[in-house]
Amino acid sequence: MSIRQLTTLLKRRNTILLLLCLVAFYLIWFQLAGLRILEGSDGHHSDQWEERVSKELQALRLQASQMREQLTRLGSDPAHWRHADLATIYVVTATHAVPTQKADLVRLMNTLSHVPNLHWLLVEDAAHKTDLVRNLLRRSGLVYTHLNVPTPPEYKLKPTDPRWKKPRGVLQRNAGISWLRENLEIVDANGVVYFADDDNTYSLELFAEMRDLQSVGVWPVGLVGGVMVERPQVTGGRVTGWLTHWRSDRAFATDMAGFAVNVRLFLNHPTALFSLESQRGFLETDLLTQMGVTLDDLEVKADQCTKVLVWHTQTLKADLKIEKQLAKEGKAPSNAGIEV
Ligand code: UGA
Ligand code: MN
Image (cartoon, rainbow, N blue to C red; front, side, top):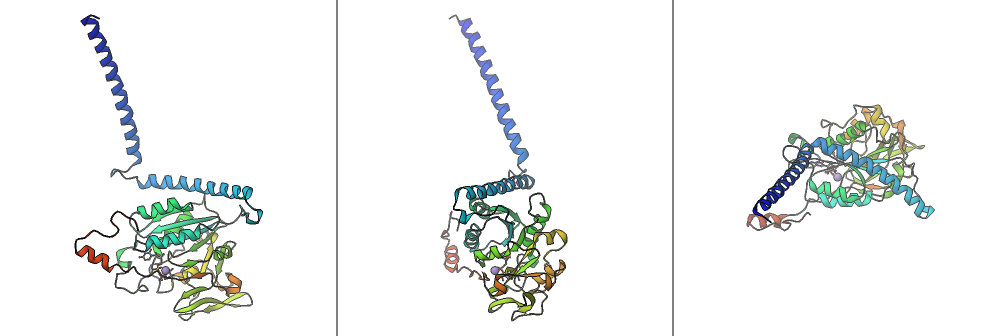
């Protein structure tokens, strides 16, 4: 091969290489630009994007859960068939970052996984969603919606405050209610809404009791208000008052765990919400009053309100004094790199 032929060949090869590089560069740039559109300027997924994906995922999860129901019917013992036409139970849970948060959420998640046609609206009391909650929900296999809204500092409990001093979980439950109102295309209008604290103990029978509510269902709550049980007073199958030690004169003297509401009530009363300004112990009464509920509307559950199916258990504040000491001594925390 002559020098001239060689130079022409090299030139041609270089030109081809250059062209290939340009194409590759263009393709990579195009991909990155696409990603940048999906992400916010700080490199994080934008809220809009996250919301869109979350909605799509939600719809897919609902479909998947319906398909699972159908498969269960086909493959299992008929005695365990679930009815695809069960009303959906929307469990709204406020949660906040404390050392015991994950333990509480895992326990609640395990309970909820046994309940068919359930949609968990888990709302973080935080300015941003956390990976801890995000990962827990992703692994849960449940139908869920992950939301967040921070409680303003002036309404937050200080570490030394007694827990009754400020209402807890108010804006978070409201975020759940608003989500239901804003997502009518996927919300089951026959569904039922239940406000479940992350640290209570729930029997599976409770969910069966609330499933078919048409208005507001009520039942006893164990270990609350300083007594073994608080419960509605039932006479002739109707609620006639409240058997509580504290303020039984409230219109609805029930703990949050003692009632569930048909979704339609929230749709028919589009402004009804929990209030940060409610007097201590009046969150529940104030909400139900806004929806025009009367004692006559209450559906008596749990065997005429004689059975306890939910307990207002409260998680002990974690004792971390050694952890604090380690920090003082400049030593690594016991959980360095480990999610607890
Ligand atoms: C009792 C009732 O069971 C609650 O439903 C009610 O909100 C509360 O009283 C009240 O009066 O506000 P209690 O066990 O004392 O509940 O409250 P927590 O369990 O400490 O809080 C209720 C829910 O709000 C929990 O799911 C908790 O994780 C959440 N929370 C608590 C927040 O989202 N942010 C907080 O700063 C504190
Ligand atoms: Mn609690």
